[in-house]
Amino acid sequence: MTAPGTSPERAVSVSEFNETVKAILEGSFDALWIRGEVTNFKAHGNGHWYFTLRDKDAQLSCVVWNRDTRRIPAPPDEGMQVTARGKISVWAARGTMQFAITALEAEGEGLWRKRFELTRAALEKDGLLDPARKRRIPAFPSCVAVVTSADGAALHDIVSVIGRRNPLVNVVVVPAAVQGETAPDSLVAALERVGRWGGADVVIVGRGGGSREDLWAFNAERVARAIAACPTPTISAVGHEVDFSIADLVADLRAATPSAAAEAAVPVLADVRASVLSLGERMRGGATRRVREASLRLRQHGRDLTVRARRVAERRRATWEAASARLGVLASRVTEPRRARLLEVAAHLQGRSPLGTLARGYAVARGVDGRALSRAAAFAPGLEFELQLQDGLVRATARAVELGAPPSALR
Image (cartoon, one colour):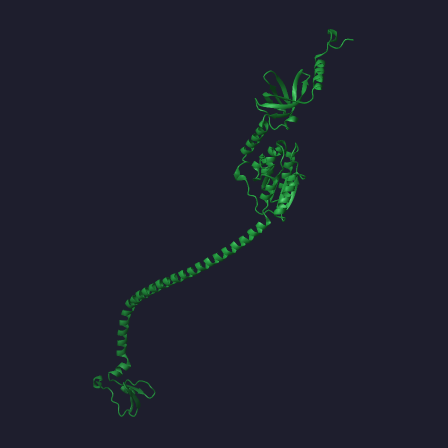
């Protein structure tokens, strides 16, 4: 019996042929690395990437399914030299062959650097890299939260350093994955837990050293935004001193290593006590100096008030004396005419007074009952009466009474 396709009668369909080619090609090659230049890159709306790899003699259609793009730092640029790992894939419906890529690396740090700069630009656009938004790390924390792997060397270093520097500080571990595909989401969840709890004074987030791929979770944009959104001041401590991450850019403080982060977060207890004692001495000295200065100022104010009071009293006395003098002049002007008139009236009254009459040589006759005897008819022979003179009293008896004597006879 002849094989399929060996004669017109045994011809195979297009789909059968394509499926046969697909089975042969896909089953003949394991995953392998291919080097070439990227051209005609297109990112489809469904998340797949399509592009061509070429060299000077040939080209190869490539695809990166959306499930695999998450493991690649960034899409490649046009003309970028890359190495791609994948397998031959045949699309039987169209009879086309393509290279399905699961890993992609550029020469040097091309893709990694591109993703780093894209993330940095996005964060800078939103103001998250502005130095003005960074907060001061508390000088004397009582509780430090540590977001890192629960079984990593970084946690051991942080706990040891804090315990040595100040055993009174509480350390709360919020475990998270620090490498691998799950690390970004795990770090974000841990930071959100710290924020909801709100019991820490400062947060250290980081891990120990590792390869670029191991540390890449701390370059994830969502991790950076979680650090920036954390309500508690943050310290980033990722890798060694030469390592630098996006997390370092958004954290309130960047530490070269986890141990350095612990030193930056917690002061030495002995130094704190010495500082408190020194501060107490300075406060006491300052208070004594201020009291002394205030006492001197108070005494000076007292002297100034005394001088001012004396000047005020002197001015008031001078004013009173001047006012008194003016009142005296006014009083004299008012009372002098009245005084002259009073003297005139007094002189007139004096002239008409009985005493005045006596002083001019006249006498007043009064009966023994004290009534004045001003007429001759009031006398009778033998009547006893008294004569009031200027300088005394004369008791007398009337011998005779003569009526009708003219007044001139008395002169």
